[in-house]
Length: 492
Ligand code: AMP
Ligand code: MG
Image 1: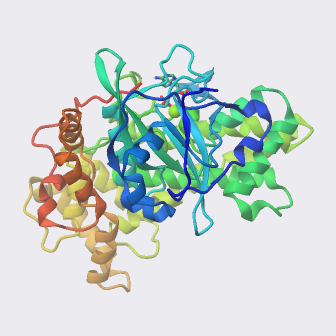
Image 2 (image 1 turned 180 degrees about the vertical axis):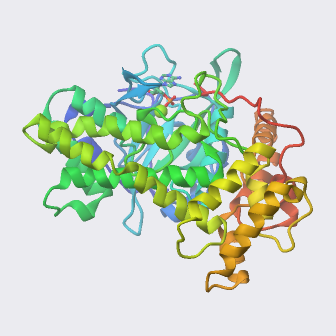
Image 3 (image 1 turned 90 degrees about the vertical axis):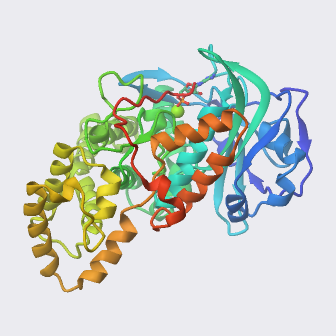
């Protein structure tokens, strides 16, 4: 226990419960955030504060900064660092919260439960050689991208606040330190199950599985065979999530099993980035040399990660290992079809298609192939496709596109819904604004120099991504030059 943290008075609106801390003791370590020198609130998410039933006015203060820095622990919180393991680039490792602390679960006035986690809050038992700290740039990056994902309608952890610590962190260079307050449905990862399985106690593993069902899949509480049902439900949520990532051109960048949340939220925005020109081989992460986590590999990696999850469940599935493997395989084998359904649902909507025809997947794929061949901007091209008449662009003038366009128009006229209804559907599913890499970089660079103007403008543009707002046109535009060489970093 650290003696110098103090307890914040009540009155900020926090309403903590700490069910995770009632799991077997080795799943976590009770600990305290390590206080920082000079907490300063860099950004507070007022809209999210309101949704959570927190008092934004009270939090926008020195006291709020102290709470988000971990210098002052709110009443009712029971800070813990969670134990977990994970496959990182295919290799099994013991991990755990080495630079994050879960303050507890905040229960909103509507009865919803959210983890409140401080990321960058200092060393824990799991830190190994790391300093337990985070730098301002990557924390603001997570803030921007997670809030953008939320506005796009994609399940994601949220960002409540970023505080500067008044300290420096030492990476390749000296960087300003910061702490992000992350809000998540939970932080139960595939890696949490891998940790539990590695401890060799099936009863503790079962406790985690039942806890997960209780928290995220309450409809399975009364299921006759809840464990295979849990596997199937987790699989469906992941398939849906990764399909949605593909729909908006999102590349997570580091889909290690410890970065896959069982509830189906996007989590751990390290080297993630949105693709500009369409190419399924796109990789931005500086450490992803083999392209393991390339845009187009994300579905198969999700299936790989789900297989690791299924392996942890084997002792709970059946006493006979053969039978257990058979049960797990039966569920895992459904992944390609389940994924394809989610993918096609979204691609169909992006093209204004109602109902399903046999050729729909082909139609969508043919457009993507053309876009790859032409190096067309993914987001802009699909948004432009919603317009009538189509804008005069090199891509739309191409011979290949004209052939495709006829085929698409024929498909649209075969459905009952009139064209203006199809267009409305398209506008609702093809974002005009995404957090483009060059805009994110620009905003972060200014923010690191103490100027939040660009970041504030970017965040405002990202709030309503499906609207054409002339004031935000600059944020909708693709980069002037190719971004293919753009590199992202883990931020550790
Ligand atoms: P991440 O890349 O944030 O998913 O982190 C992977 C693992 O490394 C997790 O166990 C983290 O807690 C740990 N980690 C990352 N950065 C640090 C750091 N600066 N100090 C200690 N542990 C860290
Ligand atoms: Mg992680």
